[in-house]
Length: 85
Image (cartoon, rainbow, N blue to C red):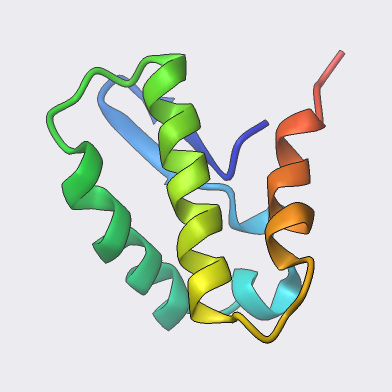
């Protein structure tokens, strides 16, 4: 699982339910993430490699925004290890 996944052809969704609650319910912060990440990926094919880059960019963005939260990047990046059966 990534923090961003394909929702339909050419569209992605932020997986806010997998984020800590204080991020997942913060619609203003979700918009900030979208505004930061969208220009980097609009117009690109939504391959797994591109979605992995988007995931990494979201983790990096949040780590830079909240540098006082030691371990936040590790916590957020850990979502990529969650798999469905």
